[in-house]
Image (cartoon, rainbow, N blue to C red):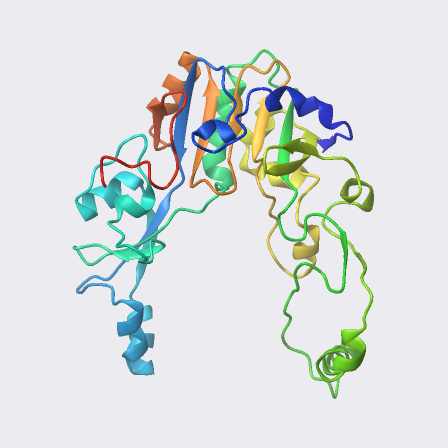
Length: 329
């Protein structure tokens, strides 16, 4: 994979997108024979002998009771169909999470306790785990004449991805440990923290400086693919590469600064992926809790039939806005 400095590689998408967001075609291209919606997994928490307490109930518990309870939590993934069964709602292609879990007006849709006492947490928006992307990519690679050639588009707005002019970095890493009396590095770190906290006068007049990102300064200052409401950095990428969850190790946008601070290797999976022959497009819009695949009827049928995925076919012009779930209204 390598950076593509000519955003015209994605210009064909612009002509297939709507200017508004009345339907999914504000982000998903029109003109394909069929479409699939792959639902990002939710998560569920349970206790063996009682309902999971609400946050208010948990906060009112003595600390010892909180600790004892937290050690007994059982956490795991949950499908949208699991949640629908628990809340007595209906799973269907245009389902919306807040409706599936019966969220009251102005209620918290991200964490909801079902009538059976289990706590469901909402799916992650804009991304999937690499182990979920892998089976999708296997289907994609089998339905293109160019599985070794394609383009991956990554949204420019992910924290720390690109360098920029500012007073501070877009993110910070906390580190613990080290005795300032014995460790010179720890002492210097403590001194730096003290200066940043107790020097508001100089901080107030600090001039913006270049804050480097995960990607090089050349990429950070380079051209982007401009689509309605979003801009993306483009990379050459074989769809077949994403069949292996270890693709993150080869991604140019791999989070090496995070790894330097002890985090495991990670990389945001592409928000848009397409092969050189443009046989299909995968779209993981940053505000969607599902990923849309546009392609042939055969490809969509295979994805929807894969037991490793929770996927349903949707029609062109589908409305995926939060108010679109007429079934569970």
